[in-house]
Image (cartoon, rainbow, N blue to C red; front, top):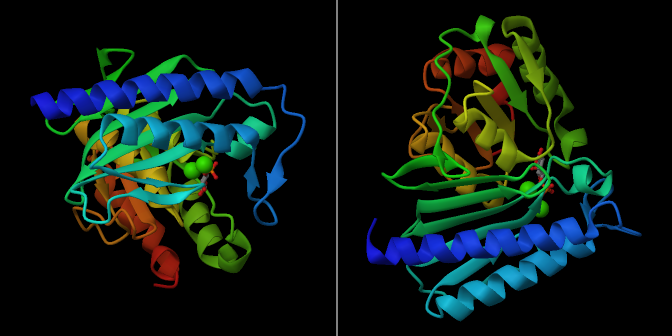
Length: 271
Ligand code: IPD
Ligand code: CA
Ligand code: CA
């Protein structure tokens, strides 16, 4: 790791731990949440975490920029380094007192993710990766699974907040995966979906409607754990702003892409 990457990782790790501490302070003591949309929630923890994260990033790296889910973009418009942050991924789980939530911090250099941290404080799991440096959980190196067929694969997916507009393709993809795989979960926190694929517990993840902050850190975890991350057409590098993601152990990638495309499924969403 270069000196600059080390400094970036040190900051990313530190602020992920601090944001996790804020999340735990309010966890199960939330007296209210607000609705951003019909089912899209935001809590005081989302807002406090993002505030802390962007303040500390720009404090350590004043010439970098930050893109956060709750506050949009801060910092220089021409920065080479853009930090893409989900201050609390899995807000619905969090508001319901479920432990599957995380802070997700991905750092891009000229558009390519070079470092990622996902911290799930209620699980005591800190996932980290740097481009070319491997992926780790609590400092232990992790690898994707060796599952070779979809029939033996445990999958995970998620549904976007505007799911009502896309019920048909979402259900077509889900139905094909139910038929063809060992099982399919919906955990409710995309950053952890990637982390579970990276750690080899799950074999594949696909989702339509993801935002860059859902994918930046997690996609690097999967790649650095030996897996593959593409859009629904198998394109690499996939577009962080392209809403579509398939992340697998690599071995089942082609089969999963074919399966979610049956009956038009994955290719029926608007561009
Ligand atoms: C959501 C979660 C969920 C995914 C949604 C995301 P949020 O993020 O990652 O798993 O299905 O598409 O928006 O709103 O909890 O940060
Ligand atoms: Ca999210
Ligand atoms: Ca969020």
